[in-house]
Every structure is written in C-alpha cells, then in structure tokens.
Length: 162
Image 1 (spheres, rainbow, N blue to C red):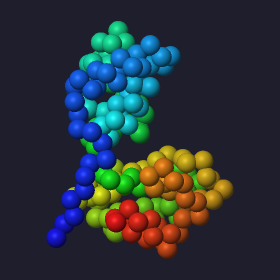
Image 2 (cartoon, helix red, strand yellow; image 1 turned 30 degrees about the vertical axis):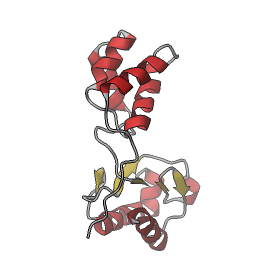
Image 3 (cartoon, rainbow, N blue to C red; image 1 turned 90 degrees about the vertical axis):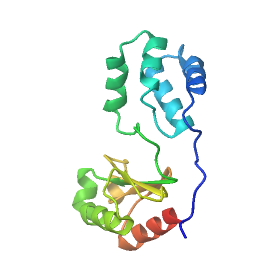
Image 4 (tube, rainbow, N blue to C red; image 1 turned 120 degrees about the horizontal axis):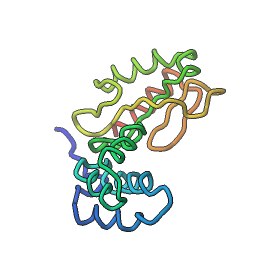
C-alpha cells in the first residue's frame, strides 16, 4: 500500500497569487521577493504567475522569466514532501560527492532534479552550500549536513522517505 501525503503547499490559486504579488510589489527588489513568496505559498512558481508579476511590476514577461530561470532554487512544479539537496561544487566533488550523488539516485530511483513517484523526496543538485571545509555536504529540508559519507547519506535518504 502506498502512503498518500497531504500537500505541504496550497494549490495554485490566481486570486491568492494576485494577493501575494500585491503584498510585495512596492518592495525594493520586488521581482525576487515575489517569486520567493509565490514559491513559499505554492511550492513552486506557477507559469501563470509570470505574466501577473510582469504586469504588477511594469516589466516584460521576458524580464521576469529571465529572473525565474536564472536562479536555480525556483521550481517549475511542486517539490516532494522533503527536499534533499546534494552539493555539486568542486570541493564536494573532490571529496567524493559524485559517488554519493550516484548512491542517492540509486536509493531513491530518480536522477538529480527529479521527485520520487510517491512525491516523498525531491533530489536536487545545489552548487555550493558554503561548507567546503566539511565536504561533501548536503541539505535536507533546510538543515545543513557536512562530512557526508555513505552512512550519513543512507540515514538522510531513510529520513526523507518516512
């Protein structure tokens, strides 16, 4: 029997999206602030929100889309219940990060950048967590983990699959 998880985020709602945009439109750097707020509310930045943001900020859709695609943390679709990010920067790669990434992919049955079929875990690459002295590193649901090895990785994967 497959467990079904309640979504952690609200489903996309144009009215709520417009409210979020209006709440932040007058702030400095509003494009980034709004995109982050939308992702926080819905778990991703819906494609339908891009023209809404552009109109509210008097920008072109291309300008907003450019910001959205430039920053790797913005998602095109909702993440799984847990997000496991593996550092792919040079220091982590040199310390065995490639083998750990392959191990995580094998254990979860998905490649980096994807979500397990049961929507429990999204496995994402991240390019530097600032823990180079304790490489390789990872982040699970915002919690930083340094000195990652096979045992620690297995424990993180098991925790995320619960």
